[in-house]
Length: 89
Image (cartoon, rainbow, N blue to C red; front, side):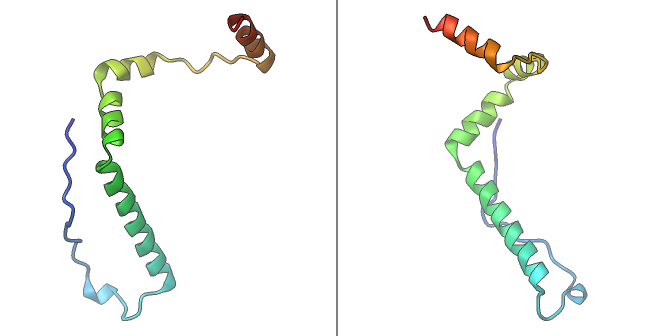
C-alpha cells in the first residue's frame, strides 16, 4: 500500500456570489474545524508508525484474522480474575 499526498494542494474554487463580505462565526468555526482535520490527516499520513499500522491491517492475512474474531465471548469479572490467578501461579 502506498500513500501519496500533495502537501500544498489548491482549494476548490468557491462561488463568489454565495460568500458574504464578512464571514460569520459559524463559517469561521467550520473553516477552523476543516483546517484542524486537514492538519491531523496530514500528520497521520506522514507518521511512519501510522503508515506501518495501516500496512499491517490492510494485509489480507490480518484482515482474515480480524474477521474471524468473535465478540460473543463474554466473561464475568470473577471468572476472569480466577483464570488470571490460576495462570499466574
